[in-house]
Length: 458
Image 1 (tube, rainbow, N blue to C red):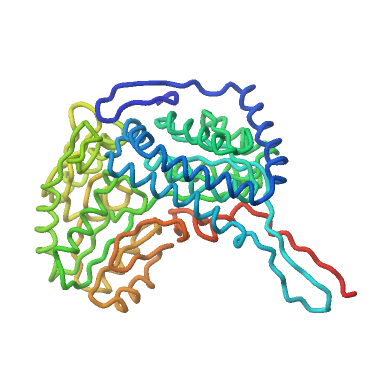
Image 2 (cartoon, helix red, strand yellow):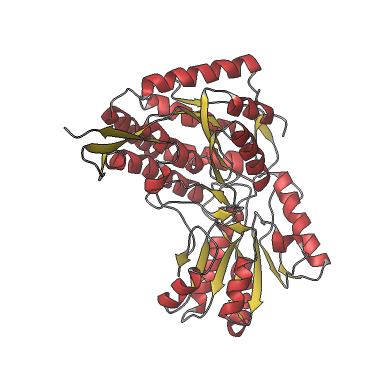
């Protein structure tokens, strides 16, 4: 896509387009957010808190409208989109509710007498580079903590979500946020580099692909800018044992197919011990066969929407075709629609090293199931990944599941449940899934100056 544009992924119809900023407009935006920070940081904390609460209220008031807009631009079914808006409101409220505690002055115990304490201060204008798969949630977990801290935000959204991008700025301003403390910018990849090289920018948070993360981190490092990266994952779902196979299958299916499989922490590699494997594959195939898709993403009966773009559907087709051509077994699906960007729910087994689907992140409604001999083999396979975001471990014994999860190279682990998100839980990974954390206490400290004050003994 050569510009910011709304293209309905269900039909392929272009509905709106927006020009990139000129270089002069970008310089103006940098100056405005820099100036806004110097004013916004002086706004009393209780007033910044009130703005965040009001943003949360506006999300709830406009819930259906924003859910429809999300479906229009990236294909999320209406009920799922409403669920995203609910989570977003909870994030804005969380940082408003807990800001005083999270930013409280911290006394230190020091030798030599006197006193020392830490105050948590803002650092400046921070760039956020956000993806399309959760066009409001991803922004909220970056913007809410930084705004209440006193930083200003320059937000570069995905090129296929321009209307959602604009409405977030509208909500912050309507809530009483200082003008330009949150500023959306339609900029090119090259202009992102300009922002990071500019002395008025103090850091960047990116959620996106490994390739985008590497490029941004390189520029940020060269310019000594703090960088937080969330770069997706190829999360393992491990079924060790179960007293309820139907529940295990349902969890795997719903987790893998939610948001049409377009979630960084979706269970993409389903690893099952051999004595449960046949029943699991049979049950999963039956469950996926029951799913249906429809171009009208507002219909309550829609169980899966299109992937976000025709390009994304083509990428999935290439990954599936590559696996099948090299010996993988296709049990179900594996085809894209003639029009729009629907991709049929797909089930693959016998995926091996050398196939793209084994090593790459498969970002769509494709379930890949692996059979392993035992617990040790499950751990080995789960760790044979360049990614390390999250994992889901299922066992009738929570203690066994925890022991296995403790051996996995991930930033998060969910026991007898599917990896999700909530405002008070830190979110992030290791390895090529990136570094840094968002949400919870850690999310507000990534772009903070923990400023130390030392007073001598009297």
